[in-house]
Length: 347
Ligand code: PEP
Ligand code: MN
Image 1 (tube, helix red, strand yellow):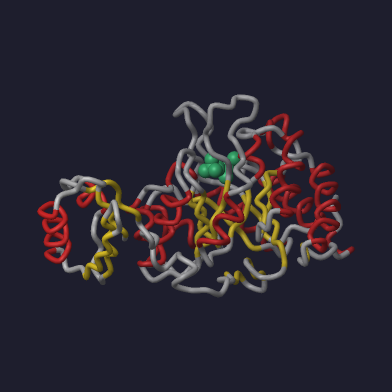
Image 2 (cartoon, rainbow, N blue to C red):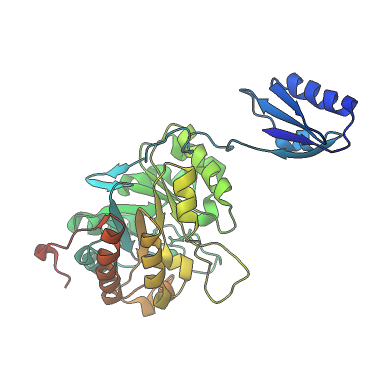
C-alpha cells in the first residue's frame, strides 16, 4: 500500500506512522517531496488500510494489491476453464445453460429440457430449492424436483446446474446436480461458501444484489481457499435506483471481472432484465462483452410458471436469440453451442 501523509504532517507524525507499520511487520520506503511525504509499504502481512488511515498526519491510504488472492489474475494469469463432462466453460465456446426457474412437473421439466437442447443449450438449469422474497411464494419441490431435473438432463444429454441454498443441502443437491448454483441472496453465506470449497463439483456463484465486484471476488475466494478451483461467476443484475427493469444488468462487470480474475464469467440476462421482452437484447450484449456463457430462463408455458414467469422466454424466443448469438459469437472470435442434432428435435 501507499501512505500519503498530509502536507503539514510533522516529522514526529511521520516517524510514528513508520514505527507503527514496522511494528505490523511491514517494510517502509520513505520518499519526501517538496510538500508531502509518501510511504511505500510492502510485506507479507495483511494490514487493514483503515487502521493506518486513522493515524495522525495521514492524508490517504491507497491499496495497490487486491484483497483476494486465488481469484486474482495476478495469482493465475491464464484463464480458468471449468469442465463439466465434455462441456468446457471459460474456453473459446460460449456455453448456454437454460431451463425453467423452478422444476414444477415432470412434463414441464422434460419438455423444457427438450426445447433448450434443440436450440443448442449444453446445460439444463432449474431450481428445486428456491430463494423467494416472500415465504408465501412457491419454495420449490425439493428432492422430487431434483429427480425430475436429473432425468430430463440425462434423457437429453445435458449437464445440470441447480441451486443449493444451505450447507445442509450440499450432499442432496450434489447427488443430482453437476454444478452447484449459489444464488444472489447467498453470495455472502460464508458457511455455505466454505463448505462448497470442500466439494469437488463446480460452483456457479451469482453476484449479490448489492455486491461490489470486489465483494463478489472475495466470496469466490472462500470457495477457492477451501480447495475447490472450479468457480464460475455469474452476473445477474444489481439493485440500483432504476425501476424500469427488475435489476440493472451490469454488462461492464464482464470486462472488469475478465481483467481482475482468471475465473470464467457467465451472464444471466433473465434476472438482469426481469422481462422476457428484454432478455434477448441483454443476452446479445453479454456475449458481445465477452461472457463465457449465458444462463437463460425458458419455460414451455411461462404464463403459468410458478416462479419468474414474466422473465422466462418461450422456446421460440430462445431459439431466435440462439440464432442471433451464433452470428455475434464468431465476430469476437468465439463459437457458441453448435447446431442441434436432428435426433433431439423438440416435440
Ligand atoms: C434463479 O436463478 O432462479 C435465482 C433465484 O436467481 P438469483 O439468485 O440470481 O435471484
Ligand atoms: Mn428465477
